[in-house]
Amino acid sequence: MIYTALIKDLFKSTALVFIFLIIVAFFCQFHFELGDLFLWKVILVFLAGSFIVITLATRFLSTQTFGLANKVTLIRWSLVALLFGLVGDYQAPWLVVLISSTVLVLDGVDGWIARYFQLANDFGARFDMETDAILLLIISVLVWQYDKAGVWILFAGFLRYIYVVLGYFFPVLLEELPPSRRRQAAFIVQAVALIISISPITGQLLSNGIALTGLLLLISSFATDVNYLIRSNSDLSS
Image (cartoon, rainbow, N blue to C red; front, top):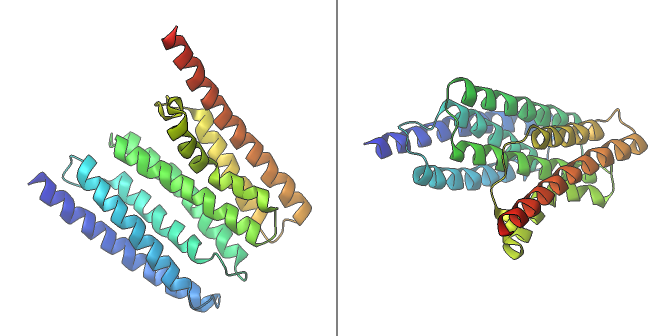
């Protein structure tokens, strides 16, 4: 019974967010004169991601509803799909800034909802984290696309995935990390740095400096986590 109720809520939530996304995407395509493939890219990415979310939610959630916090994260995911649609289009940098900023603000909203209403769970935390990671990847691609930083800025977006791949060669990296404000702050600083960099009012020299500062902070955060895992593993082994 719980499983059936969850499935219904999942599909209802996804359908409503999809309708919202289509309306926004149509408006953006015609108002900003975006390419013919824009809408199709948005739809494809949203549906692919939503399929994964629904599949995993039915496996790892044991509640009757998808949860308000997860629904906000699903809205964030739809906006990330909208950002992906802008890859390859060069005429809407302010739209990139607006969408990215909205996703970042909603990142604080879904976390607050999860804590305030005691809805936090492992699935929601993972859904939120992966949405954040893909957000950084897409914005870094767009920063490079708009020539606001060199190809090196893509490292900001791929760093999370490089870390995951390395974990298969060095299993210590797959160990669970404790919650960290520092890690959250590094993500926010990097995201804000990328958003500022892509703004049309930011010159190329300044955007390079801002993007590089954010990247170095993000690398430092990852390095701190790696050091923690290595030291913890060494302590357990001794």
